[in-house]
Image: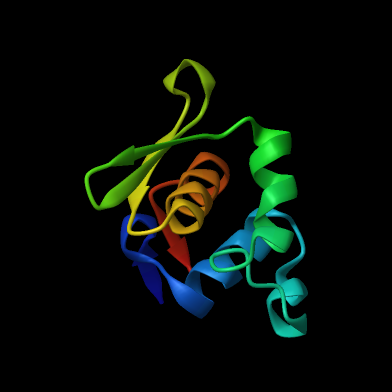
Length: 93
């Protein structure tokens, strides 16, 4: 089923991040980057994703506007930006 990355959260976003990492089975083993800094921090650092608060939400941006996404938490925003940069605006999960 196709999903808009901008609307993903929870286990669907985690599965999409695992796909973007090239490790789809990660999502089955407790990999929860949409809610755990331990899982998302290395991705954010490696990808140089900047996080900016905007009111009650967050904006995640790649350098030189190579990708961006919003979310209600910094991790959701960052992981949406990451998935969009690797897999596009929609994913098939």
